Image (tube, helix red, strand yellow):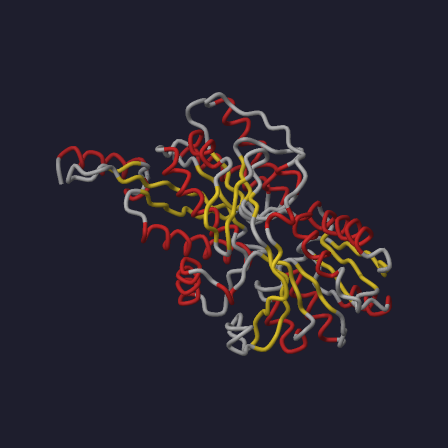
Length: 422
């Protein structure tokens, strides 16, 4: 190692920065510089939604491992942070990460955290021209983030609430056995939007369907869902639609199982985070979902990521593709831009199309919303054909009933974005 390299190593050590985390490393052989981009992953790694945060972090690392294995000159490094599900903690993390020179943020958790991060990043970038940071959101699906609150510095890699609900209700519209629907959701912006969009789309597509009840409950603090389940049973509903995730979905499904509630559960996140284990055999032909992940039709890239993930966490599951699409699109954008500077990468991301995990995906330039296919699935016994893989160590997995193309759920444009000068 040369004296200059030793000096750099010692300086970084005094600053508390890991050697592998430098943004650009020049190879001693004099070949092309290898670029290393750090991704600050802000997740709830403790608290009631720890399972969600852990799974997102594990999926991100598996996607990064796959990308790094096939990329010669560009590597990603994941730097995890625990926001504990709290907006103020996320703001503290933002300051810590930017002080460390990290300029790419991913994750978030709740809509409140993501909203705060978007506003903070907008303000930070206005104050720090030439040192901008970029926010790559792969999980918070509040429509406002690509509509009223859309920002040049924010990109979303997962279909938002209304896109998912349109796909879901389009499928339900063809099921004549659905006559009475009960809506139960977490009482904050996301849950409220699931409820509102379900009523709107069902009213338009199936005006004969009765909304048998609407229920909102506190997020992450309800321990006993039996009173809610009793109301669902008393309503005579044959179908439940819920956006609940993590602990709130697991406990809801457990309570329904305990009293023998026989309804179809249409969910956003019923394919992971303990929900399949909670429902067990009682969920066969009952637990359903709208999702971007299709285990039975994985591409070579998806299979590599899946195998890496499952080898380390056999009882955990990848439950959406937003993380995977994000890593691949970011890599493509860096190559297209010819720089790792966030502003140049942001312009390169706009309108970018690529072969996604389960078909072509596109980052819509006008609002920074990813357009990707979705699937409607039903929990069934593993048969090696329609259900090739069990989930969470079970002999049960998800059968795909319908594929909804990206073009069918493309949202109406509602973003008035202010862009910086190139």
